[in-house]
Image (cartoon, rainbow, N blue to C red):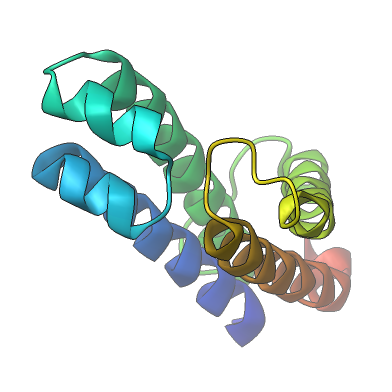
Length: 139
């Protein structure tokens, strides 16, 4: 069992749960997590758009969590595991690095959102990268 991939999967699952919290608790959670005032206002107005967007994120993070757990050996092997994990790792790393460039021009989100979400994504990307490297031969 690869502990780094277990941690990566657990953190992706935790991020999915936080997004579910945003859907359930609404505007105050969107604001707290820095999703942008526009998302919070839409949630307050009862728009389905924040729920649809956030549900998509929940789905993606949940799938990514399952792939990390699969690679770690916690669950059975999922299809295209190497390809999926390369893509997941690359997306986390790219999002982590790219987000730091938006701190000075936050595009409707807070600078804090970009800093913390980028730090989290970069950390998750590194966990995936190291865990994937360790596990590669058994995938």
